[in-house]
Amino acid sequence: MTMPICTKNAAASAIALSLGLALSACNPGPQNRGLESVNQPVVEHATYSLDLNTTAEGLPISEQRRLADWFESLNVGFRDRISLDGSVTNAAVREDVAAIAGRYGLLLSDGAPVTAGYIEGGTVRVVITRSRAYVPNCPNWSDKYATSLGNQTDANYGCAVNANLAAMVANPDDLLHGATPRGETVIMSSNKAIEAYRAQKPTGTDGLPKVSTENGGK
Image 1 (cartoon, rainbow, N blue to C red):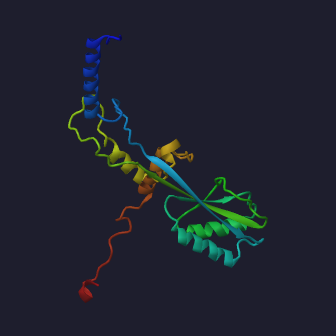
Image 2: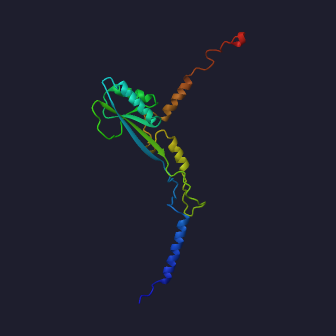
Image 3: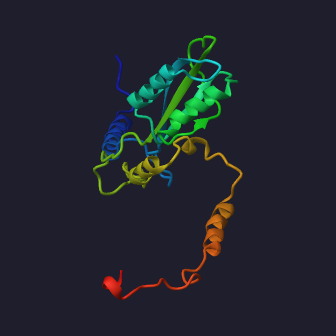
C-alpha cells in the first residue's frame, strides 16, 4: 500500500506556484531593469539593378532614356545610393550615369553591393541601394499597468526618441556603424561660415543709394 509523502510540503508548493502565476500575470514579458531601451531602430536594405548596353562614347540615347525611366519608376531620391557594379573603365559611361543621377539630386557612389547574375561584356550594371530605418512594434502600449513591481521600464519606453531618430537620420547605415569621416572636421566646416561672414563687405561701404524725389521717388 502506497502512502502519500510530504503532504504539507506539497500544499506549500501549490501555494507558492499559485503566487508565482499571479505575479507573472501582473508583470508579463521580460524585465528590463536597465536604462537602455529595448525598442531600437532596425535598418533594412533593398537592392535594385539594371543592365545597360554601352559604347565607346558612353551610353546610347536609348539606354539613357531607359535609365531615366527606371529611376522615375522607382522614384529615386533622398537616401538612395546609386553605384556601378563591376569594373567600369569607360569614363564616358560613368559621366552619363552620373548626369542622369544628378537630375534627382544624387551622386554616383564608389563601390557597389554584390548582385546576382553575370554581367555581359559591353554592358554596365547600375545598382540602387535603398535603406530604411524604423522601430518595429512601436508605439507599444501592451504594458497596461501604472506601476512596475520589477522596476523595469515601460513597454513603450524609447519608441518616440528612437523612431524620430530613425526618421531624421540622413543615412540609415550610420545607425549601424557610424558616419564615415570625410577628412573635414566640424571646426573646418564652421570656419567656412565665419570666413564668409568676415569677407562680406558692409552694407554702407558703397554709400547710400541715390533716391530722387521726382516721379514719386522712383
